[in-house]
Length: 336
Image (cartoon, rainbow, N blue to C red; front, side):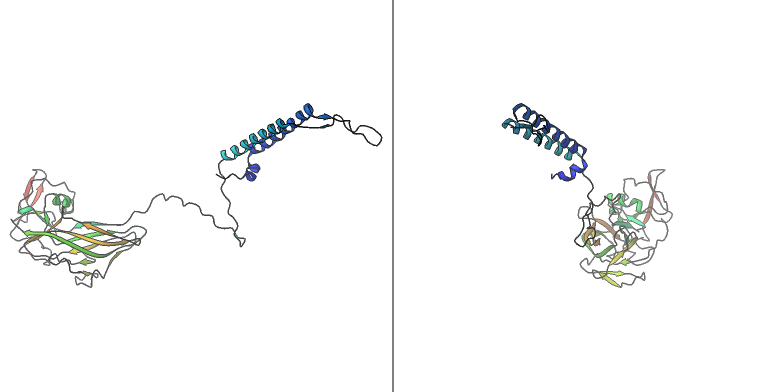
């Protein structure tokens, strides 16, 4: 730590007190030494022989006198430095640049009260029914829901836990941008881990009414995962570009869905994952949904090929069930 004594002497009352004490003590020591060891000389006189002063002494201080004065000086210095270090540092004033104008002073930035949250992607489902594992209704009770006419999304986690596959080939990715930057999807890749035939006729219905969607849509082909993904950007269901090559952008502080209409072979259940290459705030990252250990599932019904409208994924021969929370059992729906 560097101490500026010149500044401290101007601003520290303790430093001033130390100087005063030092001056008085040194003067007292000199006088005392001179009186005790000095040689008394005849008082000086003027031209008329009249004495002009009394008790005029020339001090002959010994070695011990010098030692005492040094000790006093060291003590005073310690007092001054201690007082300077004990004070809170002053706020520095701006220095002057060679041109005469005040130079900029770099100060640490004040911490933000609430840092901006990063954007993110969220997986959503637009299915109307679930194909239970091997076509057999699950024995695990599904979670309660608020909307009787539409509770497929409320059952999404439960469906994955019991290995029930959505039967509709359309799902969506909700892209939510941060307040500081747009979020951009540059590419979409998917990996198929396995596929097996659809069995049985029992289905879990959780959507009662025709659904619809608009906006940007991509068309992955689960039978050809290495191909670029066609993308429709003007909601006419005709691809305009591809991923990679094109891109899907959501402006800062906005949220938009990216609809994903999967293509696959009717009568098969696919286990897969999907991966997105995303850029936000100039940084690129990869966001993945599904894995080999916990894959996403999708069932293509044998008598309803993809692209056939609102009844996509709903078989004409299947039986549909919804959960009755009063009886804690599966109950046939009016459609069955």
